[in-house]
Length: 119
Image 1 (spheres, rainbow, N blue to C red):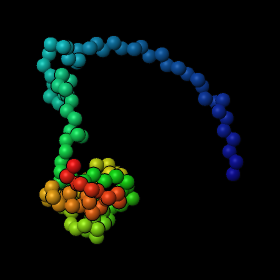
Image 2 (image 1 turned 90 degrees about the horizontal axis):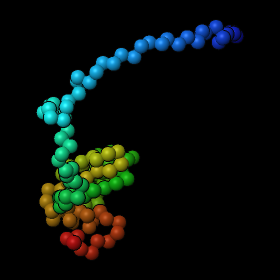
Image 3 (image 1 turned 30 degrees about the vertical axis):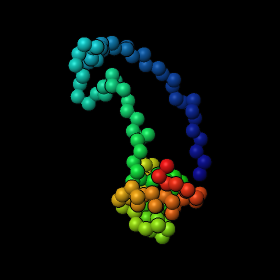
Image 4 (image 1 turned 180 degrees about the vertical axis):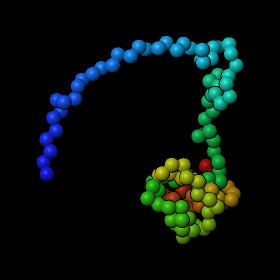
């Protein structure tokens, strides 16, 4: 079945509606207190990404793996891991109960030999 639709039938109408000036009564002025839920921009941002946590091992490139796959791999090559903490779809942190356990795990799981895991 073939349908012919004439697009010239549509009328190009532009409605010129007046633009209302609603004012700026709802915007806080500089001397007014902050509303709840606002971000205080005066405080310097803290960078927690450089804080060392010796019981965590960061892994990347695991976007095709499930949590159970990661735990099974770690168990097969080292031992049990307490928890897998997902950061995004392709990276996660492995949490171990203590610093020596995490140190031994990174030595066992690394593809590159680690001479001194304490450094």
